[in-house]
Each structure stands twice: as C-alpha cells, then as structure tokens.
Image 1: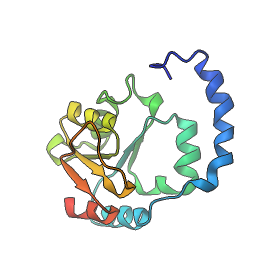
Image 2: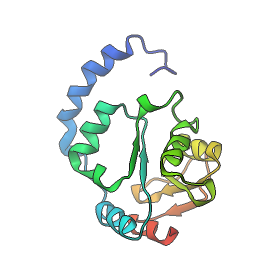
Image 3: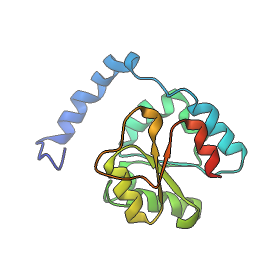
Image 4: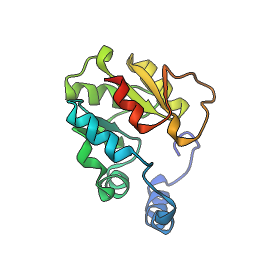
Length: 153
C-alpha cells in the first residue's frame, strides 16, 4: 500500500482486516503441508516463517490454523525495517536460528520472494505446488509438492 501511495493505510487495514473473515471458507492449507512440516521438524530442520503480514494478520491467518507450531521462529512486518524484496526478514530469521546462508533455503512463490532470497544470499525454492508458473524470475529449485521439501535435507 505504501508503494501505491494509499492514504490512511491504518484506516484501510482496520476496515479490511475484519472483512477477510467473510472469505475464510475460500482459504485452505495446501494438502500435505502439515505432514511435510512435521517431518521436517522430526528430521531436525530448523524452520522459520517470514511473512509480510503484520502480527494481527499472522495471528489470524497462521496461528488460528495451528501452523505456528511447526516453526521455531516467526518474523512479521513489525519486526523489520524493510519488507520484501529487501532481505531483512530472511536475515533476521537466520540470525535468530544461528543459520548460515549456505545451509538456508527460502521458500516462496513471488518475484519479491525470489529477490529477497537473492539479496540475503540464500537458495530460493519456488513453492510450485500452488499451481502457478514463475514469472519474471527463475528459482534455484522448484518444488512440485510439499513433500519435496524433505529432499532438500
């Protein structure tokens, strides 16, 4: 909204936030995500979620579905000075996990995710299970199913 010069961002968020619940039944967790995340954790992977969502959105969209239980760290918009495509969120998650770039892969599905991972110096994995084809970027690796994340270990 900043890039679009939307006036009164706080007002827009206050009005839109509650309305997202009207569309809750159109949102679903991709098949295989909880199982794959649990298997990654069981295999010893450290997992962080880095989102452009603000804390209240993260609580509403991630915590309310129980997905937060799979992550060792969560980085939300308020935690960083610059959002994607800046690398701030990835770098903070890596710092919190004491992770090295060579041991880190960032999964996403947008050009902003690809740019942020490149700026952070980490491998970018495209979440291809979303049915989309990458446009304007080339991922380092493309994962066609959530289970394919385990092949990265």
